[in-house]
Length: 119
Image 1 (cartoon, helix red, strand yellow):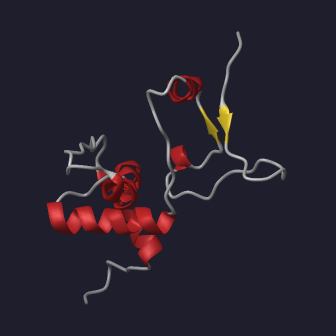
Image 2 (tube, rainbow, N blue to C red):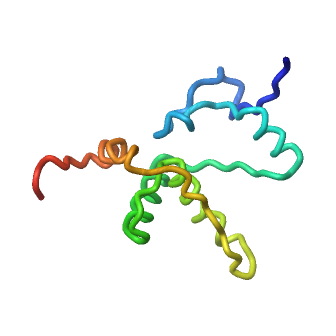
Image 3 (cartoon, rainbow, N blue to C red):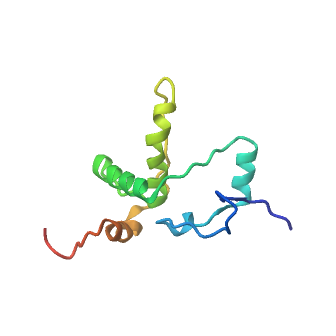
């Protein structure tokens, strides 16, 4: 059985694990189905920094009253780049695919927030 993948490699250095907040997003490869969708022009893939994802996590929590999963926060963060490029104010839909409560501790650690002490 053969498999095709796209690998993120910005130079000729050895491929290493990417430092992402979410374990599912920290590998340099893309599985074969996503490679295929990209190759036929049905999908495009972009990246954001951890800082941008954390800001989107906070923004969604404050503005919408929902705690997004970090995967969703990554997608939401890219809207800051995408939306100014779009014509005629189209509607953009992001599927909030998972609960964010599983990621709260990760976010608190990154923001250096201690919830056990009163403010």
